[in-house]
Length: 318
Image (cartoon, rainbow, N blue to C red; front, side, top):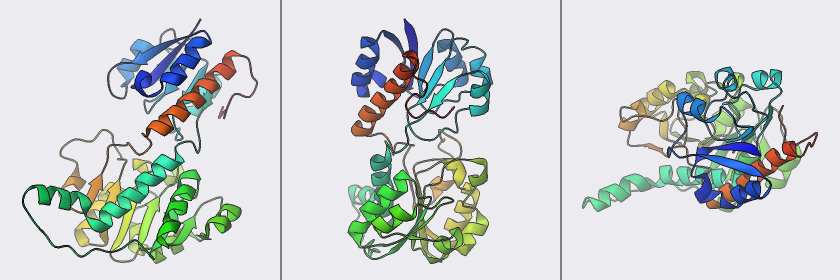
């Protein structure tokens, strides 16, 4: 019997169908019962005899691989694989997979939610009203604004689809532009500089890679319009948070919204918390019932593909 670690929390609760599917195919499922992401020491305690893992955001590197002697496959419960040491996995013959595009609807909805909350100051008004205030607020509408998408993968394309309902002019930058998708969605592909210079609102969707580390930095922000709004639902390392703080202080940024942080989880003294026009969520953009159900089945299938000897399991990376 294969042993599979479900490293993300709440697997039984939100991925019951996937768990049952694995068990019906002779798999013993071991679950993360900590209620949160596993740190390296917690992970080491669970991986000693596992054959595969459904991975959350915990880090899989040589330190973990040295303990997990039987490990054959890592199935990432999501898209980003910055928590995989892919080169080390390849050396050890560990197959790695991910689930591109599956979470696009959930994350895109979250990105647009952050934009609307920034423009209308909903979190602030909610709290103030509960405290007895009756502040009159003039807002900026999303309708008709120029929105720039940095990155034009599945999440960004779904974001563009939603924004079309607001009659936005949509610009996008991508290292590998998809002209066909852009034309279908009415999106204008531009250079990174053009997106930064022309947009009223910017949404960051690039993957976390060495070349995208601090993709938004002081120089990038200097190119933006004064009073630009920005959201990030990609990875925290894609944005220089010190530069964001400076831009909020100077009012170069009218508001910043983020679902991700350079260092997670954050603590109460996180520097951006002092800005009323900063709104955040704790890396939950992909956490919808629909996404968990589908991603659960995709990761289970990837593991079963390896068990059944398929040469090319579902969405293999290495």
